[in-house]
Amino acid sequence: MCGAPDQEVSLPAGTDLTKETVLTGRVLAGGQPVGGAFVRLLDGTGEFTAEVVASASGDFRFFAAPGTWTLRALSRAGNGQSVLNAEGPGLHKVEVAVA
Image (cartoon, rainbow, N blue to C red; front, side):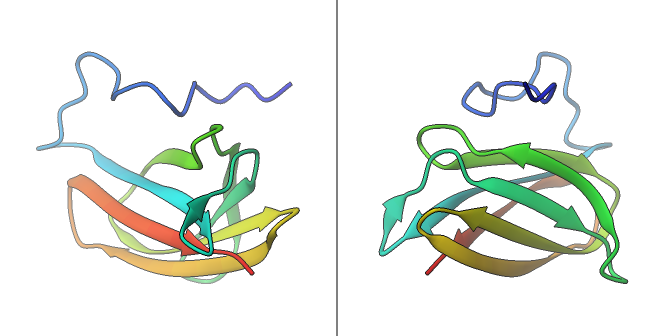
């Protein structure tokens, strides 16, 4: 069982988006949410940093440092990736399409 926090809940109480960088998004296939996808976070050099399992509604979330990140989704519906440039603290949203 994955020890990552529930991806469907809102941000934890006390999250300060003026100081923290949060990467959040949804895995989609043909515009429809893909639940249970493994979402990997890769740093700017392509190194594996973290992994979570997307919620039933395809949602995922990572707390990270500012920078350029690759989000790679692996699922039964297919695989895909998106690049996200989180220039500083705040909530940064991305969709990852799989096919």
